[in-house]
Image 1 (cartoon, rainbow, N blue to C red):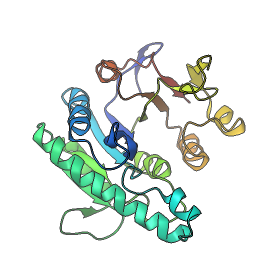
Image 2: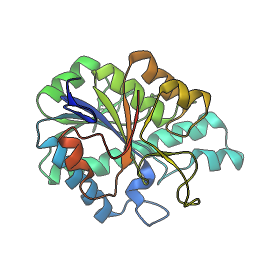
Image 3: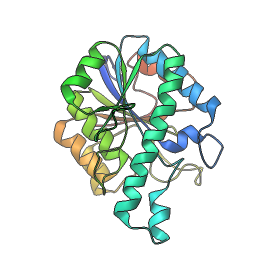
Image 4: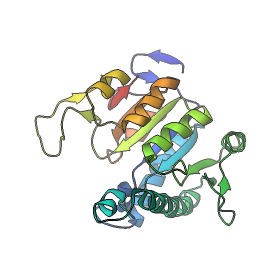
Length: 243
């Protein structure tokens, strides 16, 4: 990953991780069309710079597995339902991304030939090189793995140079900045610090996978205007970088 100066790098291929909740906006459930359009406009900023983009989206705006398990549903069933929720979100994003001038292709870990291709790394890389935005839905295809883990796995498989995790806050903090005004933001962390201190960046399986393949994680605020322009320039000075 070439670097011209501290905090500034250029990227050829990235993996963007979005939460399902991000699509809901201020709603508690579903997809806010205005938010989806905003996200598409932001992604277009990176896409129009010629950067190849893989995208993993969660499903928490449609189905919350943790809540379902607490109410008696089995973990395995809840996880499969969550996978289906991510596919709903991917289909919605496909429409809005296409409407904003970005050709897309959906890949899933299981057969869904009516609207998606089964994940195959060679086919995905071919799509990326053709400047298609690739949407990875259905998680890893296995229960007990989060969409964070799916993002780390897909990023490794496609040779992404960085995993960009878009959140509702400005990076990683020592405690919840929404609840604590004096929360301290970290500019940089190591994988080991995140794992040993159980810092809430991504789940530990995802962080360990990124460490294994030396994949940087960058956590930033999805809603802050200008952040995607800065990412397109390779500016990593405004969020939290984990290496």
